[in-house]
Amino acid sequence: MSTTHSERLHGLDAVRGFALLAGVVLHATLSFLPGFGAVGWPIIDNSPSATLGLTFHVIHIFRMTMFFVVAGFFGRLLLQRDGVRGFVRNRAKRIVLPMVAFWIVVMPLIVGAMVWGAYKTAGGQLPPAPPRSPDPLWFPLGHLWFLYVLVWLYTGTLLVRAAIERVDRGRRLHGLIDRAVRAVASGWWGFIALAAPLAMALASHPGWSPRAGIPTPDQSLIPNLPALVAFGSAFVFGWLVHRQSDLLRTWERRWTVHAALAVVFTVMGLALAGETAPFAAGTGDAWLAGHAAAYAAAVWCWSLALLGAGLRFFAAASPVRRYIADSSYWIYLMHLPLVFFLQVAVQDAPLHWSVKFPLILGVALALLFGSYHYLVRPTFIGALLNGRRYPRRSGRQAASAPPSPALPAPPAVRAGLQADVPGDATGEAQVLASLRGARKRFGTTVALDGVDLDVPADPGVSDLEISRAGIREL
Image 1 (cartoon, rainbow, N blue to C red):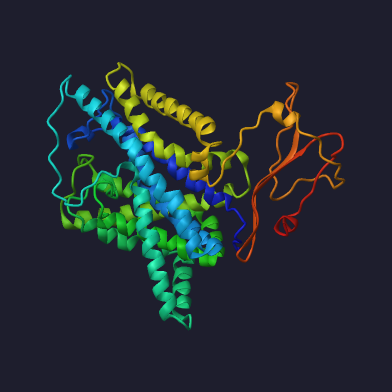
Image 2: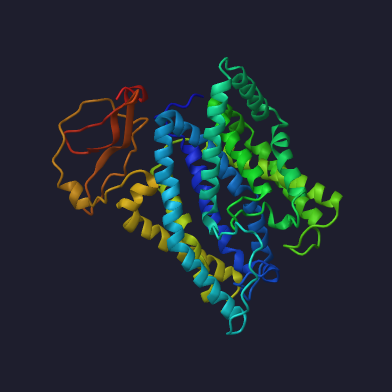
């Protein structure tokens, strides 16, 4: 399967959005985790849940490794499309600027929610401030750490790529790397090769807690070794797979096998943990090594299974999935203070966790989706996060648009067009088909850049057919 610059891989888009939204679910479980207060977490609910503890553990296994595989794949696609200068400009606008701007906005809110939670948990008085970190490069990145790590990975990848291009004039090293990646991606043992470096990094990390998973690199300007190994290897692997994107078919075919193995290794890791306190550091070299191996294998089996399932079941274009994928960036950037404030608001309420948890999640997602639709998608913030603004369209505006000339054609609407649901008796205009965000380049010349087209379903327009080849010829 070849990936052209204009082709949108809807399955990977869906996986990327799923990874970010899974993070919202994960963070909504934090106040309910048994034993989490013992490690100093300030927001503790009076109805802890082992079920949500398991939910946290499983989501934490795969979500960010899977995200970084997709980020690497799309990163190289962007580089091929825009060149080095265009790539740097795009990443500065879409990654660096949101990282700085949203950190300034959300970090004070996060601190405020946590102080309020600590105040309530301590019975109406503020507990003593936590000791200052001995790390001279300590910095509270919060949940925006993934953007900071992406900047590291983009920079390092471009530097290594430039060095290889300079020394590998005969392309022999390129061929060797491609053969190695193909062997790992297509071999049944590939997940073992991918998991081995992470297993060694976890087992050697001081104070590693198996139930806490990959240590989150959110407290220092230098990422910890297990996180750098896990997310760096995932990013590089995704980048290199893009050089041979037919390898995605292998993940698609084997997703059920990888899913079964993921469950096996997850259960194995939980069995090894036994009665250990949920977030206590592991003890014993052999025990740690075995648990690290099981955990690392689960990381890659879950990631490959969900990537394959996304490619298998969500390959077709879907306006709903596209909308959710676009909104997931805003939702993830803004969700944490809102979730924390909601957790604090209900932490002492005499309700079971099965009521509180969906309430927190439902209210947070309703507010976040609503704010995205009305305050982000059609504004400059949407242009910053999604690469373009989507103008708000009302039925009255669409109905007042002048009719288009008749276009005789066979009865079909094909690739590149999203068929809209016709209007009903409410008087909303009927739209036969829509083309959104069409782009076409000829070398360095941009012929089309984000072109939108609506085809109204008036009596003069029977049907419309635009073939995939025709779209590419635009």
